Amino acid sequence: MSKRDDLIAKYAGDLENKCGMKPDMKLLKAVTIACGPSIYNADASTVSSGDKKELDRVKKNFLMKKLGLADSPKLDEGIQACIDTYGRSNRNKYRAVMYYMLTKHFRKGSVFK
Image (cartoon, rainbow, N blue to C red; front, side, top):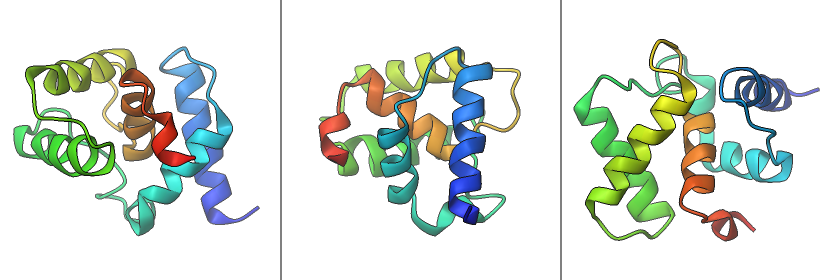
């Protein structure tokens, strides 16, 4: 298995064990690939849920640019719902997992097909 495949397996484990959801592996792989090289960098591979600037970047760069959603309070609500699902006490919230959950939350899986 490649390093990316190992990471995808780790992300699938987080989705099952920490988030209580059965991942769509095809979508998870597509979202992980879309994250680019950031998944290999320890700092960039996670989302700091307590950092307002970081959450704004997720909103602007992923939700608005990548998924094509319009700016609204619903975007912030969706981010907070995903953080709650992941567990606020979990320190390592992997970017690919957060992006996967946001994609599912906003029903935008078609962006990755």
